[in-house]
Amino acid sequence: MPIKINDLALLIKERLQNPLPGNEAHQMTRIKTKTEVTFPNTLDTPTPAAVLILLFPFRDKIEFFLTKRTEDVEHHKGQVSLPGGIQENNESLNETAIRETKEEIGIDPNTIIHLGSLTPFFIPVTGYIVHPFIGWCKEKPLTQVHDAEVHQLFSASIDELLDKTNLSNEEWNIRGYDAIVPIYNFKKCNVWGATAAILSEFKWILKEIVN
Figure 1: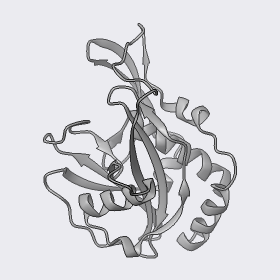
Figure 2 (figure 1 turned 90 degrees about the vertical axis):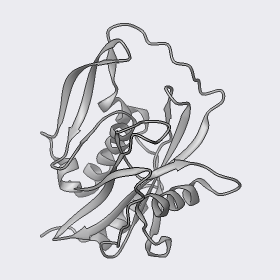
Figure 3 (figure 1 turned 180 degrees about the vertical axis):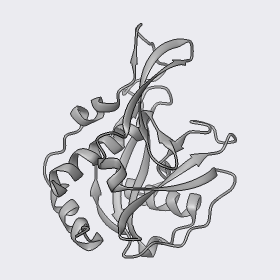
Figure 4 (figure 1 turned 90 degrees about the horizontal axis):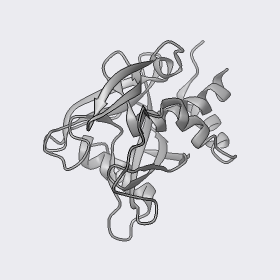
């Protein structure tokens, strides 16, 4: 029998109150280069940002949203990511994740129930330190895509994320560096980089809960 969204939400909330796998999980999808790469940004002056893994039930599965960014955004053009963005004013990081989710894909904040957060992930290319949050909706929420930021909206199931065969390595050239890039191959899109690292920690936690 498929696990119910309410049951999974309670289990996730409880698990997030304990120590997280953090860097150990992030290493599952770390991009490897043959030569050392020098980045322009360090952890000394990071820019706070937040993303949201929003769980919801759909056709006997539990899914979450992913977005393909447009070519007009400042960073990560055309990449698949979780809804999110840079912290503004005096808002909390959880408020950032929820606000950005509303702005990017139109989800009513009042329908989102907060479960907790994962380990922050630093992106040296942009200088962002991304704080991932997990939330859930009791039913699939209504969406409205913001065309200026989001080119396409996808959903993936936790069954796909937990599938042992959906993580593969590809050889890429990134900014002139030869690299081995781990990629999650979902049915509707592929995910790599920071988003893959964040999903790897979520996958680790899910495996503890559902196995």
